[in-house]
Image 1 (cartoon, rainbow over the protein chains, first blue to last red):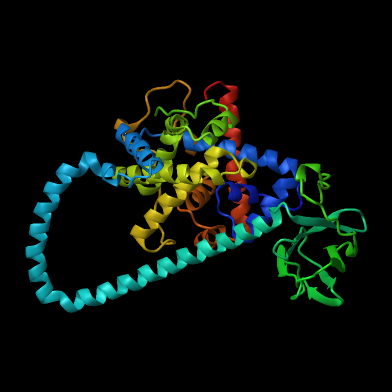
Image 2 (spheres, chains in turn purple, orange):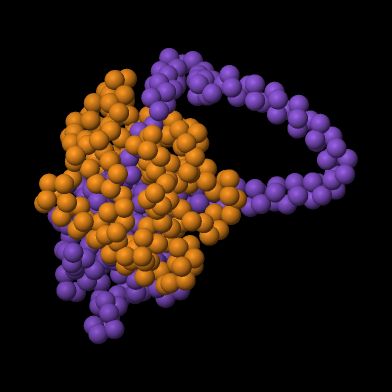
Length: 272
Length: 190
């Protein structure tokens, strides 16, 4: 696959839902325009499906009944019959639980007397570890939500978009302007370069440096002030050490009443 | 070791049917994919009772969030499998507390319980044969990313290789799998 943007392995990680949020966004955007990448993803997913199928194992029939019953209950607006989840095990479980509870109560009374301090310490340690795990999960969830929000901005029907075209005609990045929530996102298809966004409207002008630390991020989201009328990009792009600086030719912002990606021309293979 | 392959049903038709909200459509979805999903979940959790609960939770979640499924972002089964894998991995991590702790996971081809195997189907393939088609470093990367749900950064740290190598190894592992399945299809074994 001759794709200079998606590294080998990126689509595989995407299929496994193992990409960090920023790379996931970039990959989704690539897939949107790049038919070759879409075909490659299909092939990868097909292999992963066959891989899963090779591990097939029939679940007990009772699970199907529980699933369908829970769904039916939800559809009918009843409380899910979660009791059904363990129905087949409930009787033996109840007997076992009663016996175990009695036994544990006796043991606990003795153990509690001698080991209260140790248990207290262990519980604290366990609680700390659980808190740490919960924080880790929350962080991952936040990252994913941030990625999803970004995607929603980019894929909004109200988003205007234009490509940042280099001197050789290749598109080096794409700017999205979601006019509903006044958010703009620049997606870079190459990591190096300098880019300034000029914002003007209502007799006010401002500039935003999209590469504050000297490198273009894969995507850069920024808010636009109320009343923004135009958005321009200016900068240089290092395509590689060999080619040095490549100037970006600015294109006029295209406001589309409603985005229809299928009508957009496909981007060059080497660019996306 | 007999295994069932995924059914040859047009996914588009199934998705369209599911979008009607018909109860029966979801039953068909379950019948078609539950064995493959259960197999993967079991390999992650390695407990029947917990795997059954996760399978149930997965299908309820799939049903609840089906409106969010977007065909343009990937295939239905991949989407479903990722929901189930994530639930299974979360469950596994909650039991083991340390998500990156070194564990031997799921590629043990001998651990399959005969009682739960799918009925014999000549169009099937053994997991052992499949594992034999992969190199040890490819198996390792699949274990970390597929079964343990590590991010590629975590996998790089765990195996002590650069991030880029994680990607290239995964790429080559999937390439080997694709070649393996293509050969099998050619020989009409799958």
